[in-house]
Amino acid sequence: MEVLLFGLIAEKAGARRLELEAPTLSELRARLAERIPELSALSYAIAVDRVIVKEDRALNGSEEIAVLPPFAGG
Amino acid sequence: MSEAKAHKVKDIFVEGSIDPAYIATSIAKHTTRTDIGAHEIFLGQVRADTIDGRTTKAIEYTAYRGMALEQMTMIREEAFVRWPTLTCLHVHHSLGVISAGELCFMVFASAPHRQQAREAVAWVVDRIKSELPIFGKEMNADGGHVWKENR
Image (cartoon, rainbow over the protein chains, first blue to last red):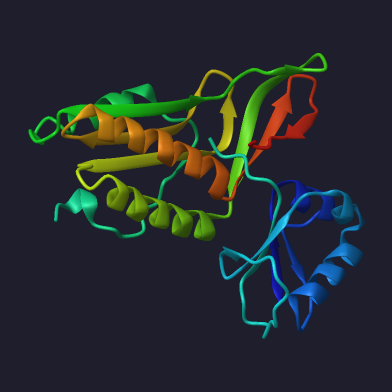
């Protein structure tokens, strides 16, 4: 599945998108941590289909996933 | 229901800074709406903060557009429920590099009376700052940068 990265997270990953495979959100977090070693020290949220999801859940691979650093609008 | 209250997804994002002349034009567009008695406008300007001797010369804004616009639509709808007499609500946020001193954010509400317009603008500004996925890279005069975080 395609994972969209933004701001500081995209900078640390050196990419604005990653291609990852994970059947659940918790496994996706683990894959992300492997690909972006700095992630464990950063504050971020994961959005599934444009809604922030905190609990673990199953993923079917068709969702729009985004990794979001702290917001800074205004 | 007026066109201004139609709850469709509106694009709030503009490339580059917000021109003060555009704001004047926006005000002028309301002269035909004689049910309006009060306008309240919040404008955000890029501040040249100095932290550890480094001064911000600009902020580069990026956004997760799809989510930001969905969140904004929900915030708009909730604003019109909370303040039913609100006549209209206009929101713009800049993307791209905005220099210190330039405007990057506008929330403009109009209502028959000042209280609704004032309350709505303050509430909408706070909600946008905490809930819209907008990211800001504060670019320093020395070439370095720091990622902005709303608190």
